[in-house]
Image (tube, rainbow, N blue to C red; front, side, top):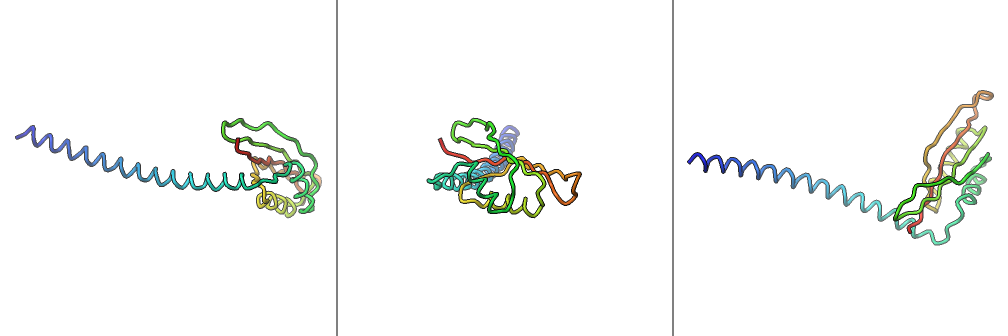
Amino acid sequence: VQPIIGLSTTVASRVDAAEQELLAMNRLRRQYDIVNTSLSKVEERILSNYEKRNLLTLLESLAAASSVQVNSMEERKAQDDEKYKETRVEVRLKSVSLKDTVSYLTAIESSDQLLTVKSLRIKKRSDRSNLLDVTFNVSTFDIL
């Protein structure tokens, strides 16, 4: 009788472990579905930009619309990916107000073309306390 009781206890603990694994798998599946849906939306947005403008030209026009004077823009090497091509530009603004900086960054983020602002650095100027020097990277993506 003892071996049968021991076997039933082992089976019950294995059933509990399997149920816990099933719950974990269901939770991971829901997270996967959320991420996959988000990725699909981003890819749709990338593909919907048939008339993509040159990133440098687009950033200059957004700066002009935001009344921001761009000090420099340089293309930077982006990481290679087997599915996406990233184009990255480093933008430098000198002696700009916080209001103008926020206006420009908002225009970039809300552009029709999918743009992402990365690695934002803001420094307070030593000569005039109400102005800033701002450097950030802007990326756009194409599907290969």
